[in-house]
Amino acid sequence: MNRFTISLDEQLARQFDLLIADRKYGSRSEAVRDLIRHGLGRASRGAKPPDGPEDEVAASLSFVCDACDMALQARLQALRHAHQALVLSSHQTPIGLGLLLESLVMRGARGRVVGFMDQLTALNGVRHAVPNLIAPATSLELVASTARVLRHASAV
Image: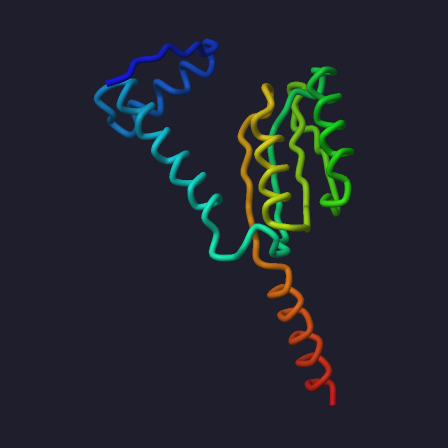
C-alpha cells in the first residue's frame, strides 16, 4: 500500500471528520480512498464519453471562491478570457463572508469544454465545484426545434 501526506486547514479537517462520522468510515484513510475512487470514477466518465471529444456540448460549472483573493480572481479572469469562445455567460453572486458563487454556461467541443472545466476546478482556492455536461448540442437543437414545431402546431 502506498502512503502520502496531505495538509488540511482546521475547518476543512473538521468538516472531513464530520463526514467520516456521518458515513461511519473506520478511518480517515478509508474515507480518502473512497473519495479518490469517487473522483476517479467521475474523471473516467468524463474521459470516456459516449460521444467524441469534438462533438459539441453545452455545459455548466458552478463553484465558490474567495472574492478578496485578487491573485485567484486574476487567474480566473485569465482563464475565462483564454476560453472566451466557450463561455456563453458568467454570473457571480456574493454569498457572504467574502465568498462568491460563480456559475458559467459553456458551449463547444466536448474536449475543450471538459479541459476548461478541469483547469478551473484545479485552481487553488476554487471550492465546491460542480461541473455538469448537459448534452450534445445537436440534441439540444433538436429538442428546441421540436418544441417550436409543437408550439406552432398547438396555436393552429
